[in-house]
Image (cartoon, rainbow, N blue to C red):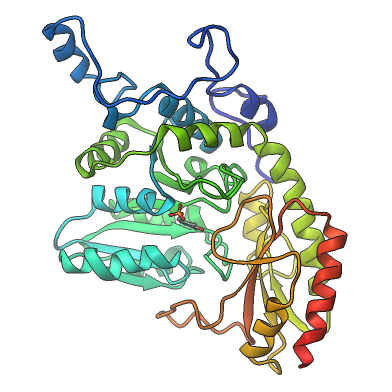
Length: 400
Ligand SMILES: *Cc1c(COP(=O)(O)O)cnc(C)c1O
């Protein structure tokens, strides 16, 4: 397995870095945490001072509320540390973090490659606004190899978008191979790294821009929406920061502060949820009602070798394919009667969730058949034995 050490703090463990990154230093009257800074107008001593500051508005120099303030900068530093990048931009939602780099790099006449397993609302953006602006998207099989990616790239392909594992179906992509093909053609590699969090270090594998929905595990308590765009170089920083500024992207400092609070327990939550998720996934994989479990950390996963090669761990979100003898209605009846699992979108909070996925996902590159009706499970911080007992009574309802 690769190591997950930090370029800035080599040798330090993830939990240590999450405890120390983005702290207030001496700027908060000695308190441990940065305060919530709210503000629109920033005042200057004189006009010259203001003119000088404006030159550094992308460098954590406060010029106006939309460029962020100390609370934002603290979280930006933490997320850059999580992702192993040089700079990070915090935006209002995970979806805004998807949109900003796409808009930064694509213009009319350009072509974009997007995996068929992409997060649904990202597909809506490509098929909606981007298409209307004359940007063409081709959806590709997420399991494409380097030669396959080379064949998909056109002279006007500017962005190769990736998401690994894929939303709902959990295909692990060969990011280094895809990045080699993309870079050989001068295209940017964007990645939605929400599932991987710190378990996948995007910039060591050829990614140019990494996207996270901080709404998920970083927030961790199902009470905020936030996104991040992280880069590993000044050129990409100018591109994404400039696009976000032009679009007026901003995040509430109160939400940012809650994310900073979430960060302090991130390592321990992830560790516990990874273990609980695997326990539940393994139990489900052994049940006769289940055809297969789509969890990259299980050896039965088709791209388990890529997960082992590139990831240092897993989160607690995975898919389940039920035996084909069941109908989607049977699976919905099973989920409806679960007592500890909520039925709802999103994930990464402290609570467990279950969601039918068959019929809710769009596939256009022929990668949608997994052999039976499917559901997605998120394992929270409950006792896994209680979750398993709940699932056991749920599975009995599959038979009607
Ligand atoms: C939830 C999610 C997003 C979007 O996050 P929001 O904050 O809900 O907009 C993006 N990508 C993935 C993979 C997600 O699961």
